[in-house]
Length: 138
Image 1: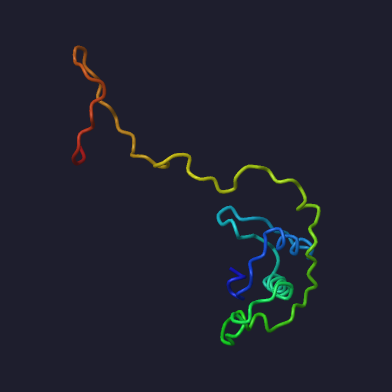
Image 2: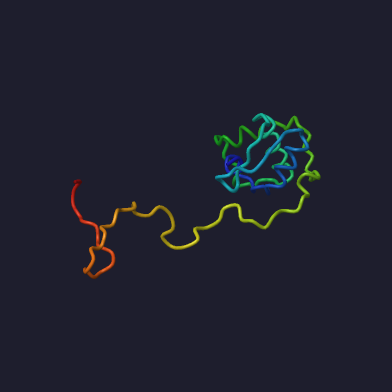
């Protein structure tokens, strides 16, 4: 993630969304990863927001000492974008209570064994279901 690259504390989703929306870009959550976003902002804008976040929430000294780390080179530049962290009205809408990433409803939930044809029961025979034959193809 972006924060792991520069070794800073992770920002809340609302904070990064607010910064992107106030900069004039669209953003939304992804369907797969809870801590990822989709945006039409260019990489330079996203890295400027990360740089502004690091200025607001400084990195610990032991994390900053590695001069060969990629995060050090990224943070060496000053942000060119003035970041507005205030939350726009679009983010103030009450959230629904539905879970975004629900757990499986029961143990062993998911695809089961394929359906097999059952032999018909002849009149006079007892027993319900007959078990399918094991072996190769017919």
